[in-house]
Image (cartoon, rainbow over all chains, first blue to last red; front, top):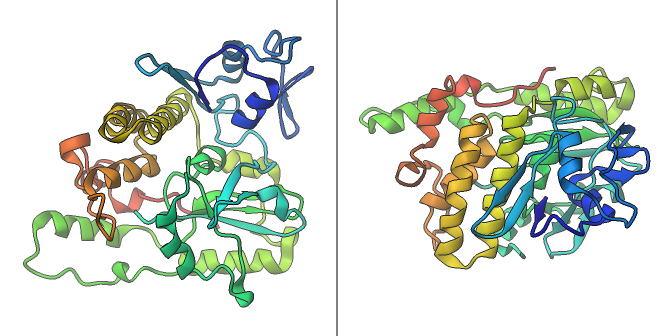
Length: 116
Length: 224
């Protein structure tokens, strides 16, 4: 997740960018919730540094360009912390947004390929 | 970003053919690598009707590459010989993986190839602090390359991508993407697949494959 500031990041932005939804019970993804006291503020924003620490996420800062990248969590020591499929927004050939969740009810074989 | 250069590849797969219609999607930010664990291509995950992953990211070739069986001609440069030798050594599970997909398509959860959620998580690739940091470094480099104009973006990305390569040397996506951009001229009709990116990254496909144990260690082999 790319950030140009660590202040004012909303719970929705954090959820969209990381897949971890800040809820009252903790930071949640699928059926997994990680307790994170203080990460979810009353004003609807997220203490990014606190959330990153609870989820074992690296926060990398490019000082010259004033931008951060928040990496993935490491709570399970595995790429997947849940078998619930992530639902990133991708685009189709014509640039239209597409979410994998639109295929619910069907089996999906998601194949990654590149021309290099 | 609207990557028109992908059209030739998408159109070749005929995603609108009624007999074989499928969504063909473009991941302009490499988010699927982070989210699903793709570290090379081709790799695939299987997702059931409820949106649950039933097979984690693995190498997903379904046709044996002709390069596996090609004879290496005499008289070619030694580096090319080494490259072709390692390509031939890449494990091939195409027939078995294709058969497993078809079995799952027919039998769903009853297929022996459909895994439980615990198995899927346990079989997904390891992600320690270095691997996670490599992901952030790669994303940062990609962001700078695509948001800063021209050479400034290219230059800003190189340092972060080098760091991603150092932290997670087994992620071939990070390397192949960076190397291809470094060695393929902007107006080239085809990508440079040799990826001799030593001048920029100090590394290359063949050198890093050999350092990682050769072609036999190049893919995440499916556990069928």
